[in-house]
Image 1 (tube, rainbow, N blue to C red):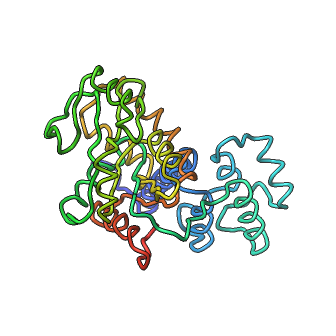
Image 2: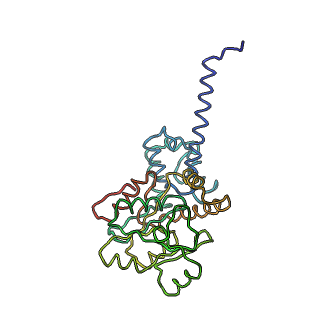
Image 3: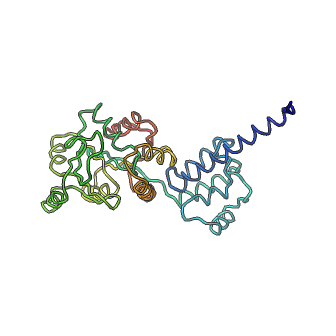
Length: 305
């Protein structure tokens, strides 16, 4: 007969499992900070509201070094400037320290300031696999009054995609003609491989008829639209977390390992540009995210962002 296990041994094993889970959860928060899926202000506010939460358990040193472009040397200077001990946890900061940290974060990572005016031209962008197409399709199905722009692309159709509905699938020669004839509102090469562009005429006709138009495009295209149509409302779609974004890309199964790696590298660059947008929406639930986008076409709505 084996030796009978004691309660304290079982407790130690459970505590060890909880410790591993907490370390993984903290690592996930740090990845989200590093890839800018969440803002440092959001994590700090969560930590202050719930000191025993995962964000609250982060050491201040780990929190700061998870932020872009902050290494150990800069971290130590920041702690000295804010009079915060390097052994402190984020949830354990005093009132004055919390105020000073948030003030420093707002200066170092200024939050986007949404504009007061709303436009009937909505631009939805975000990193690869965040679900832009799924959210746009939900809007197409439930809000036929909103015109969903159909982009032209040189890539091949994915399973289930229909020419003229999801994209206009064109050759490189035809894409060159569209550019030469100024028939595209914007166009760009995405992931260093395929070209995408937005036909100009359908958008101009819909706007002239008083309709709301939604463009689901990439970051480069959104920047071009902002230059061409400064009144456009730019919306950045975010994943709930970096790990979720990776899982969505892997689960989609439409790219090989090399292409996935390339898209994830691009996603990190795209996430770092979200401050250029007027609004940010987290796509944790497709229906809720789609409704938030629709709400931005009205002046009275207050979407969850």
